[in-house]
Image (cartoon, rainbow, N blue to C red):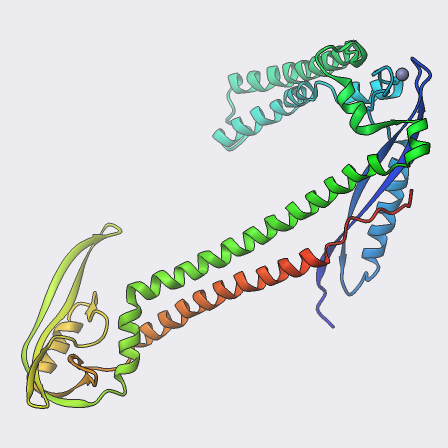
Length: 382
Ligand SMILES: [Zn+2]
């Protein structure tokens, strides 16, 4: 194929590793399961780099291996409820993240001030000395504040000792995530692995159901537009469509008038003319009065158009109309649909069929994926 398609390949790999720990505080030996997931996206031209997917997968596996061999999770000892030194480091690294973010604002703020003032004046030359002073102060104060925030975060995190934290109950985490060596050798890692597999499965399912929800909602919206359109104009469109095959009867014009209506549209006065007619016709000895030129309104904002039409009708007041064979009360002078009405019909049909189709297809796709969804496989067997 000559058309290069840009595609991104996202490869996700997951793995678990058993961590064996000898408690620094009470010498208890215990294990916990470290679980990591790595996604790698490679963007490649489909025709040029057919290996992009493999490359992404290889990088992801490499990162996964590294994370599994070096990673630490804060899991308290199941006997004394305390964290190991490396775990304390891990906890401290992510403590008070909000202070890090606030500090980051300090570094970004001067650029914000600069862009804002330039945006107002549009060019450097016209920036007043006050504006330049504001920029200069922001450039000094912002990073100073940011740096202080970062230092403060580090200092507070270093002071933080999760082993003396009475607010948190380490036993709940220890119970859920750790096993003594003895327990592990007797029962194997199943108790620790099950919640991890479950959590992964429910996350995959919720990702899936979100996509499904969006697809179904879009489908329903389109189907809704179609249904609304047809309830608004469907009867006219359907009758107009059928009227082409209705029988004819001679009619006599009684009245042909033009109603004008003037309204304001986008600062301009617009005049709309609407045709109002009345005619009589006889079907099987019974006389009827009709008032329909076409199915749908016969009106125009093209001044004079409707007036001309009324004039033509008046000049030859005898013509054939069509009437509904099952209900002769319903009649029309010009049968069929206008090209505009045909287009609207096609559009509404498209919305309805497309919307219902989208719902059906995504429902089918979803139930198929649901069935195929394997319980998430880990790269390495434990
Ligand atoms: Zn311990």
